[in-house]
Image 1: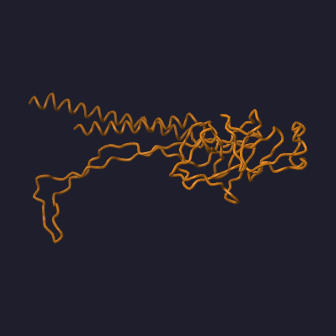
Image 2: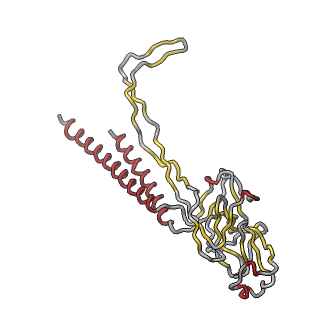
Image 3: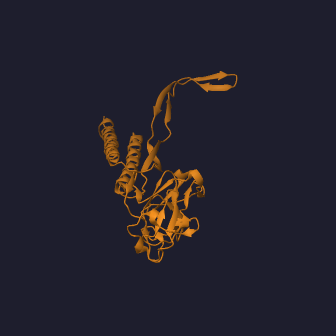
Length: 282
């Protein structure tokens, strides 16, 4: 009888974890580069029920066996196994800002932080006070030769992630306003964005602020080269891959499942109360 309580309670706990995950997805629907999380649940081991009073032991050349008929199996509850992140790409949004960058395929931008190198798909950058291309938290964006230092209106990033500056107007970048890139003179290759991948990127660990950290399971970061590199789009950002309608439907499902487990516990409690207060009295 008490097993029903534990089964219902474990179901409620699993649905609570799932609800928290959905709520976090909805809260980050407008966060650039955010990847939605999905909870994965697993059942506890099922119990195999047999008849106890049957004379079911038989002998065979390799030993003995049990002939007691199987009644069936009974479930013993469920638990949350892991929170899995779906890394499919989000939609690309045009911003027309020179400081925004999006990756059109697999890959991660490298960011320098006080805690070591971190990785992101959020390409919404700003120009720092010291002229470095930075995240909104103030962490420099890494090129293959180190942090990238540019001036406003004086750089372009091509589809291969190469950062070009115009040497002639480097001291007066305001003179480039309104000019097309093909009107520049003496373009100079400054650096190339450091774009990396991992052997198993599904095992990257979220660090907050759209940052990710490599783990032993994901393997170390590897710089992407040649045709393996994604297309880099300047003036675009990658939206989150959260589908609001789908997440709302899941939230309704979670609420219904939570209520069903709750009613299971209430039913078990009512049955036990009747057994103690009425059947035993008879």
